[in-house]
Image (cartoon, helix red, strand yellow):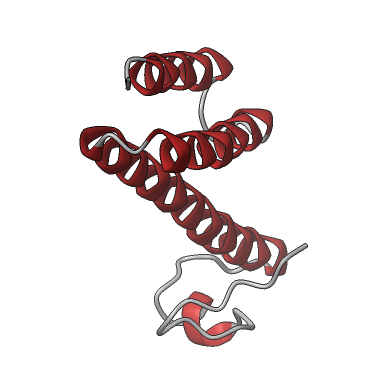
Length: 109
């Protein structure tokens, strides 16, 4: 499992995050909160990465650069599949986005 170290969040989530601001009293509840924070950060990073690939792909399509668009489409499709596999997005949502982007890329002369 990868370590998440976003700016401003300590690598080890401990009492600083869960302690005073939390209503949790049980050790397991505090651990659940730490897990939720970690998952939330990971999911945010993954969604951001997908959006970045989408923007890059649209930019390449608009510029008419088919080779670059095909490379980005491959990465974008892979990222969408991984997100669907981990239930970050629904599998049909991933399929729809891949299909629509592929149509745009194929329209480039």
